[in-house]
Image (cartoon, rainbow, N blue to C red; front, side, top):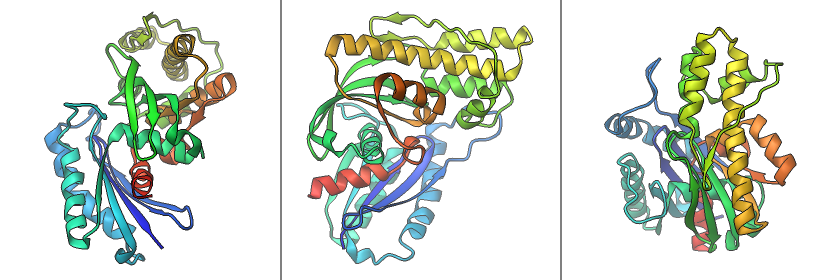
Length: 310
């Protein structure tokens, strides 16, 4: 039996995963970083501290019933995106830990970007293994990123050319800002969706594109205006998500018109939203990561490590 370990210390989640190449099973342990009530996020110094405090306990739980001698290699996310100059301090915690494990077990280390991990997790979760060596359009939509890339798989990673992005607020930031305004707990994605599903009024939202790019800061202002006007919370939540859905839909249509009918993959925490997912699955036959692999996780890194070794 050969196991492949993945480590990811993103801005809001500490996670470790083990991929069993014989059974195809993916084990994972992950934990959100603690954010004080009412706050929108963490400083990088605080994120580094909390990752350091959490990572060893998650690893201990992951390997509790595992013979660590069967771990063949370790993969880790060391930067946000697979481009030169991409850097965020919180990833150093996972990278240093992975180096220590590899030195102790005398096994290979493979480094990837957080974005590659998200794309890999989406392909693994949707069983689209054929795309690991093909070209496709991948959307990475979260609190830290809202962009589309032309992804070219080469078995153990992805070349990612950015082809569209938000010009201001990320989709996950918009969700959390509106959610906190409505009294929800950070991160607000799941609670905002539950609230939106209670709405029965029709929603019309018309975000504008600049080229292929979107602007999402307007949705926060529009939701604030609705809130001040006394609109009920389910309507405001539904408006926020419909604005984001429509912006992503316009971006998708624009990119398909330029690049042709390429496969579409959606990854990132915001894309676990069932309202957006159901709409895009019906219209585009797009592939999404299952919820367990949508938010930040090390599963995609573990699978890329297996691919690299294979």
